[in-house]
Length: 187
Image 1 (cartoon, rainbow, N blue to C red):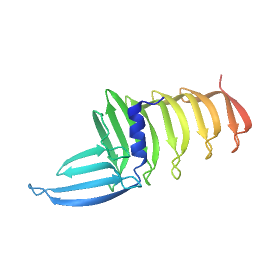
Image 2 (spheres, rainbow, N blue to C red):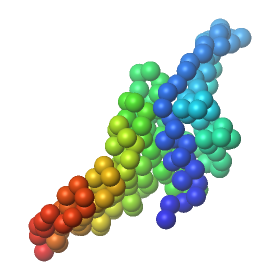
Image 3 (spheres, rainbow, N blue to C red):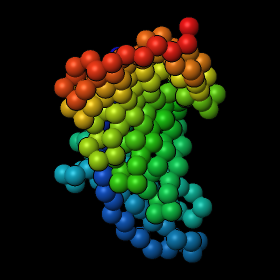
Image 4 (cartoon, helix red, strand yellow):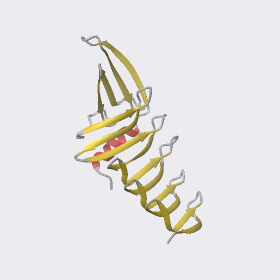
């Protein structure tokens, strides 16, 4: 089960689909200041980037436009247009990373430990936003369960990893969820 704060972040950040930008002009020191708003499809503001000279701050809201709290700090990696591509939330010593496709659909999300993937990670389809796969990680390597999903949400592949290597019996399914075959890996 995901942490409730992570669920709220995930909902809000999934809605980052388009943005509008307005330049608020020069600040008193002569440096440019600007505000970029990232909005949900219904127009609610879900993220705001304020720039004043060399300083940039970010605010993230839920789907209702209410501030998301609490997170201790965050890091936002942007593309050349300023859209978020990777966002790391720092919450009480934990790090949650959410990555986005160029169309602002959520690409992947999960926890980081020592700058490596850790725990359960979920990847999403670029066009539909549907869950594409779930993979367990330890120290940045696949370790544990692995599931790939069909577009209708049924499993397509179910298997296990051990330190980045497939192990045991893997099951492969057709589009309707019927077992199509198996394959054994390693010991």
